[in-house]
Amino acid sequence: MSPTDPTPAPTLPFAPAADTEAADLDRDLDFIRTAPRHLVARSAVAEVLITDWRQLGPDTFRLGAQWPRGHHFYAPVAGTWYDPLLTAESLRQASVLVGQTYYGVPADHHFTITELEFETVPGALLLGARPAEMCLDFTATDVRRTGGTLTALTLEADLLRGGDYAGAGRLTLHVSDRRDPAAGEGGGYPPLPDPVPPAIVGRLDEHDVVLGVPDSAADRRGLTWDLRIDPGHPVLFDHPTADVPGMVLLEAARQAIQAACAPYRVLPVELRSAFHQPVALSTPCHISATRLPTQSATEDAALRVTAWQSNRLAFDSLVVAALCG
Image (cartoon, rainbow, N blue to C red; front, top):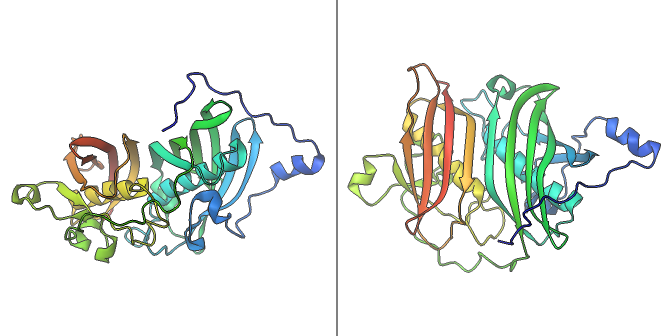
């Protein structure tokens, strides 16, 4: 990871020079076509959520994202709500686009998420007759450069649907130099552990289960699992990567709280995660969860989920979820 300056970089200059540019700021976001894949670090066009973007002012941006009603991985929860993890993926894609488009990060550089959090309003995530058109209003609160090159960026966002508040998010990215494009293609992955039964973690297909049954009988009696690292998964591993993608760990956190609350279905409404170190593809990773107390039995469920690799804490997440049947 590149070192960063202790002082924030100056804000971006912003001065629309023509009436057409000023008018462009006022027009509605378009949801007609998706962003180019390379701007959001995706290989498959079908996985691109971002559709439109513009700069509103110094370090402020507006982006549009369209959420499909029937995504093959981020499927509706209980047939009623959009999957809240679409919020996390929208934040991730938007931050990569902002970094490349407005802060000059080359497309071959590597973005690493070190913090990601979001909260959602369940009523704003209800499925409708058309795909959801989401507006993300971003503010960059901590822009850092070394030698004129962006090395870190913190973005805070409000999420709106049809003008109504739908949630908020925050993430911090670190930027490092280009990596070998063949990184992650060499194999040497640990054997896939047997999956937890898909229904327990809210999945239909065991291929989408990221929690594996641990070898230890004692671990099998608690909220402890082995991470299933499957580089062949078409969504979680959309392209070759040197480390386990952050979205895999967020999915592990979501599946952990679903397992803890089974047989009830849960809707994650708040997630606050820190990525302490990269999770290597070649080394087993262990997931554990701890139930957190709530004031009454009718309140949302809360869980702290951690990922450990080589006896070091790599990831931890607070997940709060509403029981929805």
